[in-house]
Image 1 (cartoon, rainbow, N blue to C red):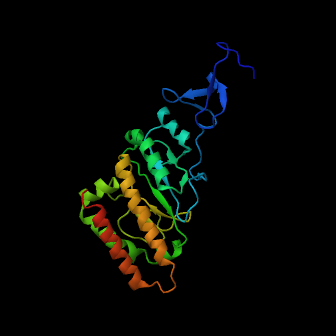
Image 2: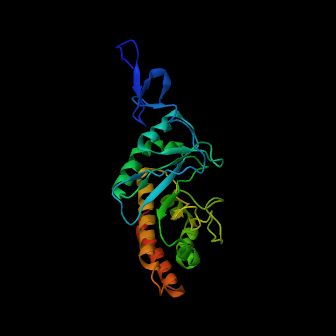
Image 3: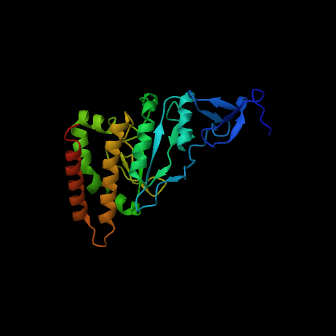
Length: 252
């Protein structure tokens, strides 16, 4: 289409980078616009299959739940988040890309720090970390996670500061079988271990907690695949994870 200065005004969508007539896009901040297609709300089950970083043995992504549908949040489309419906929250659930690089993940967390104000009381910010051993983790979930849960339960103040909130209906402290709302969810619909208690209070808090979760999953993945893995080794693993948690949260 012919562009005529001061006759037709064009704006570029910050998500898809296509140009549109000004009336076809919506302003979302002082400099960015988003088109109608990129502003479309997706179904709850929609997955974000975009990747960022060089492929590695472990990957991770998160769900940035919000209590608002403010236009400002559509800046998240600029970073390839997908906005999805979720009946349990007041706003949208923004699904991040799948990260291979922790550096890229940290960078995005700091970029979206300004949106923490939209993460209300009804929200969590769940982290998914990849694993090829979901069935085995589920088999030994009590041995692996109960020692950590015990420490989290008895120190509510530290738990809230580190994870962003305390246990509730959607992130239970009791380990149930075949139940997706366990704080450490071993039955998610994808090949991941889901950390459901996490909540984005600010970038530094969320990064610190997520780094612990990523390191924990990596530790589990490295050991649980061995043929001689058993109850005793699972219990020892749980004790070591709980000890590491004590170290990480020492100054929280």
